[in-house]
Length: 368
Ligand SMILES: Nc1ncnc2c1ncn2[C@@H]1O[C@H](COP(=O)(O)OP(=O)(O)OP(=O)(O)O)[C@@H](O)[C@H]1O
Ligand SMILES: [Mg+2]
Image 1: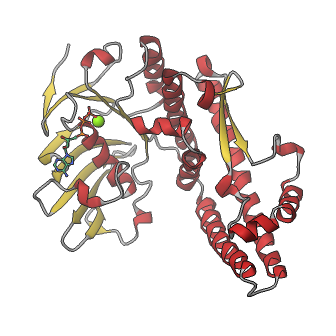
Image 2: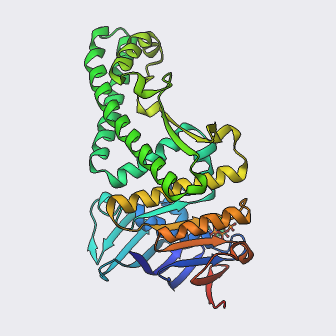
Image 3: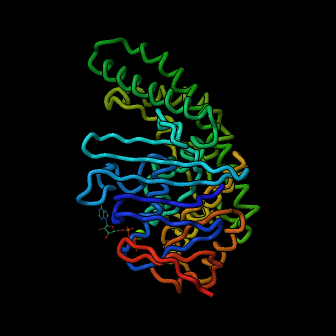
Protein backbone atom coordinates (compact mmCIF):
# COMPACT_ATOMS: atom_id res chain seq x y z
CA UNK A 1 0.00 0.00 0.00
CA UNK A 2 1.30 3.45 -0.76
CA UNK A 3 0.21 7.05 -1.08
CA UNK A 4 0.14 8.17 -4.71
CA UNK A 5 -0.71 11.78 -4.22
CA UNK A 6 -1.61 14.47 -1.76
CA UNK A 7 -3.62 17.63 -2.25
CA UNK A 8 -3.90 20.36 0.38
CA UNK A 9 -6.07 23.45 0.58
CA UNK A 10 -5.40 26.08 3.26
CA UNK A 11 -3.47 23.60 5.39
CA UNK A 12 -0.88 25.22 7.72
CA UNK A 13 1.47 27.30 5.52
CA UNK A 14 0.13 25.83 2.23
CA UNK A 15 -2.52 27.71 0.21
CA UNK A 16 -2.77 24.98 -2.36
CA UNK A 17 -0.50 22.04 -2.97
CA UNK A 18 -0.64 18.98 -5.17
CA UNK A 19 2.20 16.43 -5.18
CA UNK A 20 2.75 12.89 -6.44
CA UNK A 21 4.82 10.57 -4.28
CA UNK A 22 7.19 7.84 -5.29
CA UNK A 23 6.23 4.32 -4.24
CA UNK A 24 9.44 3.99 -2.24
CA UNK A 25 11.65 6.59 -0.56
CA UNK A 26 10.63 10.28 -0.67
CA UNK A 27 12.69 13.10 0.76
CA UNK A 28 11.44 16.57 1.70
CA UNK A 29 14.29 18.98 2.31
CA UNK A 30 14.44 22.68 3.01
CA UNK A 31 15.17 25.26 5.66
CA UNK A 32 13.58 25.50 9.07
CA UNK A 33 9.90 26.49 8.98
CA UNK A 34 9.62 25.93 5.22
CA UNK A 35 6.75 23.42 5.63
CA UNK A 36 8.28 19.92 5.83
CA UNK A 37 6.63 18.73 9.03
CA UNK A 38 3.34 20.17 7.78
CA UNK A 39 3.34 17.54 5.00
CA UNK A 40 3.93 14.73 7.51
CA UNK A 41 1.21 16.22 9.72
CA UNK A 42 -1.35 16.25 6.89
CA UNK A 43 -0.76 12.55 6.16
CA UNK A 44 -0.92 11.72 9.86
CA UNK A 45 -4.17 13.68 10.20
CA UNK A 46 -5.80 11.66 7.43
CA UNK A 47 -4.71 8.40 9.03
CA UNK A 48 -5.69 9.16 12.63
CA UNK A 49 -8.15 12.05 12.51
CA UNK A 50 -5.88 14.29 14.56
CA UNK A 51 -2.57 16.09 14.61
CA UNK A 52 0.43 14.87 16.59
CA UNK A 53 1.44 18.47 17.35
CA UNK A 54 -1.67 20.14 18.74
CA UNK A 55 -5.04 19.33 20.20
CA UNK A 56 -7.02 21.98 18.37
CA UNK A 57 -7.72 21.59 14.66
CA UNK A 58 -8.02 25.38 14.40
CA UNK A 59 -4.23 25.67 14.24
CA UNK A 60 -4.14 23.52 11.10
CA UNK A 61 -6.13 26.06 9.08
CA UNK A 62 -4.00 28.48 7.10
CA UNK A 63 -4.06 31.86 8.82
CA UNK A 64 -6.81 34.03 7.36
CA UNK A 65 -8.81 31.05 6.03
CA UNK A 66 -11.96 29.48 7.38
CA UNK A 67 -11.32 25.83 6.51
CA UNK A 68 -8.73 23.35 5.34
CA UNK A 69 -9.02 20.15 3.40
CA UNK A 70 -6.76 17.24 2.58
CA UNK A 71 -7.13 14.77 -0.25
CA UNK A 72 -5.03 11.61 -0.41
CA UNK A 73 -5.07 9.01 -3.15
CA UNK A 74 -3.83 5.65 -2.01
CA UNK A 75 -3.14 2.53 -4.05
CA UNK A 76 -3.36 -0.80 -2.28
CA UNK A 77 -1.56 -4.06 -3.09
CA UNK A 78 -4.35 -5.13 -5.47
CA UNK A 79 -3.82 -1.92 -7.49
CA UNK A 80 -7.13 -0.54 -6.26
CA UNK A 81 -7.18 3.21 -5.69
CA UNK A 82 -8.91 4.74 -2.71
CA UNK A 83 -9.65 8.42 -2.20
CA UNK A 84 -9.48 9.83 1.30
CA UNK A 85 -10.86 13.28 1.97
CA UNK A 86 -11.10 15.35 5.12
CA UNK A 87 -12.18 18.87 5.81
CA UNK A 88 -12.40 21.03 8.90
CA UNK A 89 -14.30 24.29 9.10
CA UNK A 90 -13.64 26.54 12.06
CA UNK A 91 -16.91 28.46 11.82
CA UNK A 92 -19.21 25.50 12.37
CA UNK A 93 -16.42 23.30 13.89
CA UNK A 94 -17.46 20.58 11.47
CA UNK A 95 -14.89 17.91 10.68
CA UNK A 96 -15.78 15.55 7.89
CA UNK A 97 -14.10 12.45 6.50
CA UNK A 98 -14.92 10.66 3.28
CA UNK A 99 -13.56 7.51 1.73
CA UNK A 100 -14.28 7.21 -2.00
CA UNK A 101 -16.83 10.02 -1.64
CA UNK A 102 -18.78 8.18 1.04
CA UNK A 103 -19.24 10.04 4.33
CA UNK A 104 -17.61 8.40 7.33
CA UNK A 105 -19.82 8.66 10.41
CA UNK A 106 -17.46 7.45 13.11
CA UNK A 107 -13.81 8.39 13.36
CA UNK A 108 -13.02 4.77 14.28
CA UNK A 109 -13.96 3.82 10.70
CA UNK A 110 -11.08 5.80 9.25
CA UNK A 111 -8.40 4.85 11.79
CA UNK A 112 -6.03 2.26 10.44
CA UNK A 113 -7.16 2.63 6.81
CA UNK A 114 -3.84 4.32 6.06
CA UNK A 115 -1.58 2.41 8.45
CA UNK A 116 1.53 4.32 9.34
CA UNK A 117 4.32 4.68 11.83
CA UNK A 118 5.63 8.09 12.69
CA UNK A 119 8.88 9.21 14.22
CA UNK A 120 8.88 12.86 15.17
CA UNK A 121 11.62 14.52 17.24
CA UNK A 122 9.31 14.86 20.29
CA UNK A 123 9.03 11.07 20.41
CA UNK A 124 12.37 11.06 22.23
CA UNK A 125 10.28 11.70 25.37
CA UNK A 126 8.97 8.20 24.96
CA UNK A 127 12.49 7.16 26.01
CA UNK A 128 13.40 9.83 28.50
CA UNK A 129 10.05 11.08 29.72
CA UNK A 130 7.24 9.85 31.92
CA UNK A 131 5.73 6.31 31.83
CA UNK A 132 2.54 7.61 30.16
CA UNK A 133 4.33 8.00 26.83
CA UNK A 134 5.71 4.47 26.95
CA UNK A 135 2.26 3.09 27.78
CA UNK A 136 0.91 5.10 24.83
CA UNK A 137 3.45 3.41 22.54
CA UNK A 138 2.17 -0.08 23.35
CA UNK A 139 -1.49 0.89 23.66
CA UNK A 140 -1.38 2.55 20.27
CA UNK A 141 0.07 -0.58 18.63
CA UNK A 142 -2.49 -2.83 20.33
CA UNK A 143 -5.40 -0.52 19.49
CA UNK A 144 -4.45 -0.77 15.80
CA UNK A 145 -3.81 -4.50 15.68
CA UNK A 146 -5.97 -6.21 18.32
CA UNK A 147 -9.75 -5.88 18.10
CA UNK A 148 -10.33 -6.98 21.70
CA UNK A 149 -7.95 -4.46 23.22
CA UNK A 150 -10.09 -1.35 22.71
CA UNK A 151 -12.93 -3.03 24.61
CA UNK A 152 -10.63 -4.07 27.45
CA UNK A 153 -9.14 -0.62 27.78
CA UNK A 154 -12.42 1.31 27.73
CA UNK A 155 -13.99 -1.12 30.21
CA UNK A 156 -10.94 -0.74 32.47
CA UNK A 157 -11.13 3.07 32.47
CA UNK A 158 -14.82 2.90 33.24
CA UNK A 159 -14.17 0.59 36.21
CA UNK A 160 -11.35 2.87 37.36
CA UNK A 161 -13.64 5.90 37.32
CA UNK A 162 -16.28 4.07 39.32
CA UNK A 163 -13.78 2.65 41.81
CA UNK A 164 -12.33 6.11 42.45
CA UNK A 165 -15.83 7.44 43.04
CA UNK A 166 -16.54 4.63 45.50
CA UNK A 167 -13.29 5.47 47.33
CA UNK A 168 -14.48 9.06 47.61
CA UNK A 169 -17.86 8.00 49.00
CA UNK A 170 -16.08 5.78 51.56
CA UNK A 171 -13.88 8.70 52.54
CA UNK A 172 -16.98 10.84 53.06
CA UNK A 173 -18.44 7.98 55.11
CA UNK A 174 -21.46 7.81 52.80
CA UNK A 175 -21.08 4.09 52.11
CA UNK A 176 -19.57 1.03 53.75
CA UNK A 177 -15.98 -0.04 53.04
CA UNK A 178 -17.28 -3.41 51.81
CA UNK A 179 -18.68 -1.70 48.70
CA UNK A 180 -15.19 -1.66 47.21
CA UNK A 181 -15.02 -5.44 46.90
CA UNK A 182 -16.97 -5.88 43.66
CA UNK A 183 -14.88 -3.08 42.09
CA UNK A 184 -11.68 -4.80 43.20
CA UNK A 185 -12.72 -7.99 41.45
CA UNK A 186 -13.52 -6.16 38.22
CA UNK A 187 -10.43 -3.96 38.32
CA UNK A 188 -8.21 -6.99 38.84
CA UNK A 189 -9.93 -8.93 36.08
CA UNK A 190 -9.48 -6.23 33.43
CA UNK A 191 -6.02 -5.24 34.65
CA UNK A 192 -4.79 -8.80 34.16
CA UNK A 193 -6.39 -8.99 30.69
CA UNK A 194 -4.65 -5.78 29.64
CA UNK A 195 -1.30 -6.63 31.23
CA UNK A 196 -1.22 -10.05 29.57
CA UNK A 197 -1.76 -8.51 26.14
CA UNK A 198 0.89 -5.88 26.77
CA UNK A 199 3.42 -8.49 27.92
CA UNK A 200 2.83 -10.64 24.84
CA UNK A 201 3.24 -7.58 22.60
CA UNK A 202 6.53 -6.61 24.26
CA UNK A 203 7.93 -10.10 23.80
CA UNK A 204 7.03 -9.88 20.09
CA UNK A 205 8.70 -6.47 19.77
CA UNK A 206 11.76 -7.91 21.54
CA UNK A 207 11.80 -10.81 19.05
CA UNK A 208 11.59 -8.39 16.10
CA UNK A 209 14.48 -6.30 17.44
CA UNK A 210 16.51 -9.45 18.01
CA UNK A 211 15.95 -10.83 14.53
CA UNK A 212 15.83 -7.74 12.37
CA UNK A 213 18.09 -5.30 14.17
CA UNK A 214 20.94 -7.67 14.84
CA UNK A 215 23.42 -4.84 15.58
CA UNK A 216 21.13 -3.76 18.38
CA UNK A 217 19.87 -7.07 19.70
CA UNK A 218 20.86 -5.99 23.19
CA UNK A 219 17.85 -3.70 23.41
CA UNK A 220 15.15 -5.23 25.61
CA UNK A 221 11.73 -4.01 26.65
CA UNK A 222 10.42 -5.19 29.98
CA UNK A 223 6.96 -4.66 31.44
CA UNK A 224 7.15 -3.09 34.87
CA UNK A 225 4.45 -3.33 37.50
CA UNK A 226 5.08 -1.23 40.59
CA UNK A 227 6.88 -3.22 43.30
CA UNK A 228 7.20 -6.41 41.26
CA UNK A 229 10.62 -7.27 39.92
CA UNK A 230 9.77 -10.40 37.94
CA UNK A 231 6.17 -10.73 36.86
CA UNK A 232 6.37 -14.47 36.25
CA UNK A 233 7.53 -15.12 39.80
CA UNK A 234 4.40 -13.74 41.35
CA UNK A 235 0.88 -14.50 40.37
CA UNK A 236 -0.85 -11.23 39.42
CA UNK A 237 -4.02 -12.37 41.11
CA UNK A 238 -2.22 -12.80 44.44
CA UNK A 239 -0.35 -9.54 43.98
CA UNK A 240 -3.49 -7.52 43.32
CA UNK A 241 -5.26 -9.01 46.39
CA UNK A 242 -2.24 -8.24 48.56
CA UNK A 243 -2.04 -4.72 47.20
CA UNK A 244 -5.76 -3.94 47.61
CA UNK A 245 -5.40 -4.76 51.30
CA UNK A 246 -2.10 -3.03 51.91
CA UNK A 247 -2.95 0.30 50.28
CA UNK A 248 -6.68 0.51 50.88
CA UNK A 249 -6.42 3.19 53.56
CA UNK A 250 -4.12 5.34 51.41
CA UNK A 251 -6.44 4.92 48.43
CA UNK A 252 -9.39 6.12 50.54
CA UNK A 253 -7.50 9.21 51.74
CA UNK A 254 -6.43 10.11 48.21
CA UNK A 255 -9.57 8.78 46.48
CA UNK A 256 -7.50 7.30 43.67
CA UNK A 257 -6.62 3.80 42.57
CA UNK A 258 -2.97 3.11 43.11
CA UNK A 259 -2.65 -0.09 41.14
CA UNK A 260 -3.53 -1.01 37.60
CA UNK A 261 -2.21 -0.84 34.05
CA UNK A 262 -2.68 2.96 34.18
CA UNK A 263 0.34 3.13 36.51
CA UNK A 264 2.64 0.56 34.89
CA UNK A 265 5.78 1.30 32.91
CA UNK A 266 8.08 -0.23 30.33
CA UNK A 267 11.74 -0.44 31.10
CA UNK A 268 13.86 0.01 28.01
CA UNK A 269 17.32 -1.44 28.51
CA UNK A 270 20.43 -1.51 26.40
CA UNK A 271 23.01 -4.01 27.55
CA UNK A 272 20.92 -4.39 30.72
CA UNK A 273 21.17 -0.71 31.57
CA UNK A 274 18.25 1.69 31.51
CA UNK A 275 18.51 3.75 28.34
CA UNK A 276 16.48 6.46 30.09
CA UNK A 277 19.19 7.03 32.68
CA UNK A 278 22.37 5.83 30.94
CA UNK A 279 21.82 6.47 27.24
CA UNK A 280 23.44 9.31 25.29
CA UNK A 281 21.24 11.67 23.24
CA UNK A 282 22.13 9.85 20.05
CA UNK A 283 21.54 6.41 21.57
CA UNK A 284 18.15 7.48 22.92
CA UNK A 285 17.15 8.85 19.53
CA UNK A 286 18.39 5.78 17.70
CA UNK A 287 16.56 3.41 20.03
CA UNK A 288 13.40 5.48 19.71
CA UNK A 289 13.57 5.16 15.90
CA UNK A 290 14.30 1.43 16.20
CA UNK A 291 11.18 1.00 18.39
CA UNK A 292 9.10 2.84 15.80
CA UNK A 293 10.44 0.70 12.95
CA UNK A 294 9.88 -2.44 15.05
CA UNK A 295 6.29 -1.22 15.49
CA UNK A 296 6.03 -0.99 11.70
CA UNK A 297 7.35 -4.54 11.21
CA UNK A 298 4.92 -5.81 13.85
CA UNK A 299 1.99 -4.11 12.07
CA UNK A 300 3.07 -5.71 8.77
CA UNK A 301 3.23 -9.16 10.39
CA UNK A 302 -0.11 -8.70 12.12
CA UNK A 303 -2.31 -7.07 9.46
CA UNK A 304 -0.28 -7.95 6.38
CA UNK A 305 -0.07 -4.39 5.07
CA UNK A 306 3.11 -2.35 4.89
CA UNK A 307 2.59 0.75 7.03
CA UNK A 308 3.86 4.02 5.59
CA UNK A 309 6.93 5.14 7.49
CA UNK A 310 7.08 8.88 8.28
CA UNK A 311 10.41 10.03 9.69
CA UNK A 312 10.48 13.70 10.55
CA UNK A 313 14.01 14.98 10.88
CA UNK A 314 15.38 11.61 12.00
CA UNK A 315 19.01 12.30 11.05
CA UNK A 316 19.75 14.97 13.70
CA UNK A 317 22.05 13.72 16.46
CA UNK A 318 22.84 10.51 14.55
CA UNK A 319 26.33 9.77 13.26
CA UNK A 320 26.85 8.36 9.76
CA UNK A 321 27.07 4.79 10.99
CA UNK A 322 23.71 4.96 12.77
CA UNK A 323 22.07 6.80 9.86
CA UNK A 324 23.27 4.04 7.55
CA UNK A 325 22.03 1.40 9.94
CA UNK A 326 18.54 2.94 10.00
CA UNK A 327 18.46 3.33 6.23
CA UNK A 328 19.34 -0.35 5.78
CA UNK A 329 16.16 -1.10 7.72
CA UNK A 330 14.16 0.76 5.06
CA UNK A 331 14.29 -2.48 3.06
CA UNK A 332 11.68 -3.92 5.43
CA UNK A 333 9.11 -1.37 4.24
CA UNK A 334 7.52 -0.08 1.07
CA UNK A 335 6.89 3.65 1.23
CA UNK A 336 9.00 5.95 3.36
CA UNK A 337 8.72 9.72 3.70
CA UNK A 338 11.60 11.55 5.34
CA UNK A 339 12.39 15.19 6.01
CA UNK A 340 15.66 16.97 6.64
CA UNK A 341 17.00 20.50 6.62
CA UNK A 342 20.18 19.57 4.77
CA UNK A 343 20.46 17.17 1.88
CA UNK A 344 23.99 16.29 3.05
CA UNK A 345 22.39 14.52 6.04
CA UNK A 346 21.03 11.83 3.77
CA UNK A 347 23.89 11.56 1.27
CA UNK A 348 24.31 7.79 1.82
CA UNK A 349 20.62 7.00 1.65
CA UNK A 350 19.05 5.91 -1.62
CA UNK A 351 16.26 8.40 -2.30
CA UNK A 352 13.74 7.84 -5.10
CA UNK A 353 12.17 11.28 -5.19
CA UNK A 354 13.39 14.66 -3.92
CA UNK A 355 11.07 17.49 -2.93
CA UNK A 356 12.58 20.88 -2.19
CA UNK A 357 10.41 22.85 0.25
CA UNK A 358 10.50 26.63 0.42
CA UNK A 359 7.94 28.82 2.21
CA UNK A 360 4.94 26.61 1.61
CA UNK A 361 5.90 25.75 -1.99
CA UNK A 362 7.39 22.53 -3.27
CA UNK A 363 9.66 21.85 -6.24
CA UNK A 364 10.56 18.40 -7.54
CA UNK A 365 14.32 18.18 -7.97
CA UNK A 366 16.17 15.63 -10.06
CA UNK A 367 19.38 14.33 -8.51
CA UNK A 368 21.63 11.97 -10.38
N1 LIG B 1 -2.11 27.77 10.61
C1 LIG B 1 -1.02 28.24 9.97
N2 LIG B 1 -1.11 29.18 9.00
C2 LIG B 1 -0.04 29.65 8.36
N3 LIG B 1 1.21 29.26 8.61
C3 LIG B 1 1.37 28.33 9.57
C4 LIG B 1 0.28 27.78 10.30
N4 LIG B 1 0.76 26.88 11.20
C5 LIG B 1 2.08 26.88 11.03
N5 LIG B 1 2.46 27.74 10.07
C6 LIG B 1 3.82 28.02 9.59
O1 LIG B 1 4.35 26.83 9.04
C7 LIG B 1 5.75 26.86 9.22
C8 LIG B 1 6.23 25.62 9.94
O2 LIG B 1 6.15 24.60 9.10
P1 LIG B 1 6.84 23.23 9.49
O3 LIG B 1 6.65 22.91 10.92
O4 LIG B 1 6.35 22.27 8.48
O5 LIG B 1 8.37 23.60 9.26
P2 LIG B 1 9.58 22.63 8.98
O6 LIG B 1 9.96 22.79 7.55
O7 LIG B 1 9.25 21.28 9.46
O8 LIG B 1 10.71 23.32 9.89
P3 LIG B 1 11.83 22.68 10.84
O9 LIG B 1 12.96 22.30 9.96
O10 LIG B 1 12.18 23.82 11.74
O11 LIG B 1 11.23 21.54 11.57
C9 LIG B 1 6.08 28.00 10.13
O12 LIG B 1 6.61 29.06 9.36
C10 LIG B 1 4.76 28.38 10.72
O13 LIG B 1 4.69 29.71 11.04
MG1 LIG C 1 9.88 20.22 11.12
